Length: 165
Image 1 (cartoon, rainbow, N blue to C red):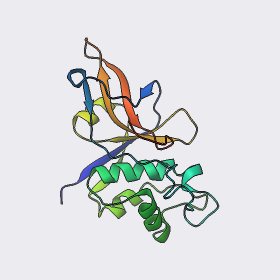
Image 2: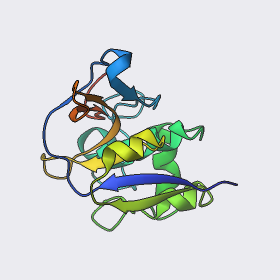
Image 3: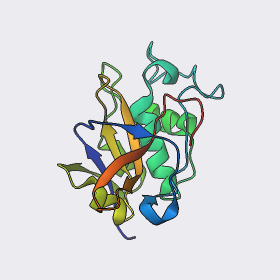
Image 4: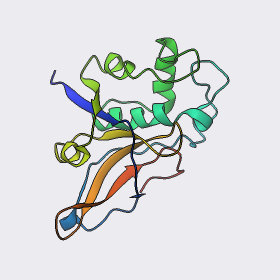
């Protein structure tokens, strides 16, 4: 099986929007959207602890979106169940990044990314990024460029929103 990268950035600063721009000046990956607020799973416990997908499940939900992009048939509910049964959370109920590779049979792996988000999107890789909001994660799915070719803004799937773009 071909190895696919799942990239994550330590921090994402700046503006983001969920509105898709005109095709001639943008690149947007077809990443499925999941919300941690979805009533089908928002009350599910993370790792059997006191935290729920709704309150603290952004990282796991972002990872579920990225895995679904690579055609893994899952939802935040089913991925959370798998993580819970495979020690996918720390004692503080934080997400273990290595579990992305374990879940996918190493077909999808986490790779630390220092910049170059646009080139990763151009290569077809969604990027999971930590935002300025403490401990909040989103999936960067595309970008819009200016007429000069520089990146004007990134487009994200934010699991804390109730609906996608």
